Length: 376
Image 1 (tube, rainbow, N blue to C red):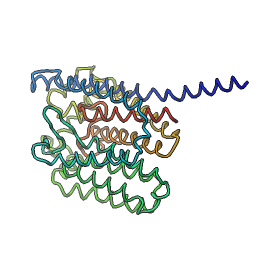
Image 2 (cartoon, rainbow, N blue to C red):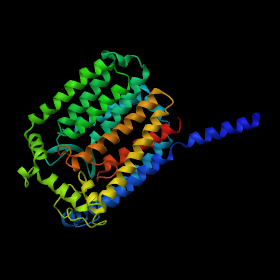
Image 3 (cartoon, rainbow, N blue to C red):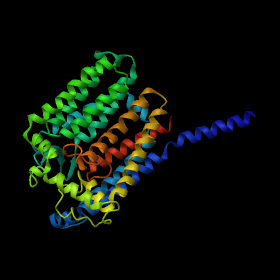
Image 4 (tube, rainbow, N blue to C red):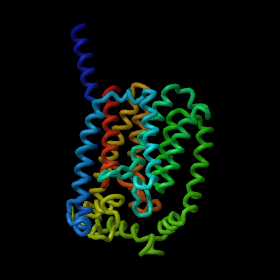
């Protein structure tokens, strides 16, 4: 009997060490599907604008390759090292420095009136993508040191200040959509970290009141709100993108027009390969295709929540929740924008939309999530 008990213990130990492999599989499947969707959505624009219909796909394949390597590396590394005093500060300060460098002439790259990227040679980096996960690491490490201190307003200040600084720098780019993602992430982590309800409401209510103020403060945001309420009021201006997105989704019907057969990608729908790639997917694969896609996304989120629920300690719980919150919040907001449920804003669909920075960092974070699952 002792031998059987020992053998059973070893079997359970080996089983646990494997972790939740579905996290890695789902991440790779979604990212690989994104490459196919990007080819379909971008090949006409890439051919006419760059003379190569594979232009965006080649860049995304590089991101998929580097992202897969990074994900597998992070899956094997001991994530608990991120809790270390020096590493947590590096994870917070480095993205903040990079966000500040965006505004340095010669380094910051401006596109469509927004300066959100750092360009060195042929390499472009979007610091806000790194900042989201850097904040998760810092907040998880800080709050897990002493579960009691977050219940005081003073104890919560480091998380509030760090999140506030990141939000301010991203807002100045300007990028209100990512600012709202970071803001929602910060509030959610504070709540899950154990902040008292009265302190949470003191932060939450002013934050919600600040949203309409930020919209009114910038004329272009007010125009977008107006276009959301009635896109046909200005169908060739602010309402154009939303109308074309709805055309694409409506044209898809139940089963779509067929892969590679979208009409809206022929320069009718702007940013078809990035922010509005879901519209092209809906047009080509229909409601059923979009449903299956979001079923996979929901399954990935569920596996992340399950990993967090089984976490061995508070740090593991918080970092798991933070990673899946970043992915979930951005996925939901992108879907709501594309379907016209909230005002239009530039926010890619993670793992699917064109963009190497987002793809590599998101896949890396899923590697960390898998690493947590190996120690539940």
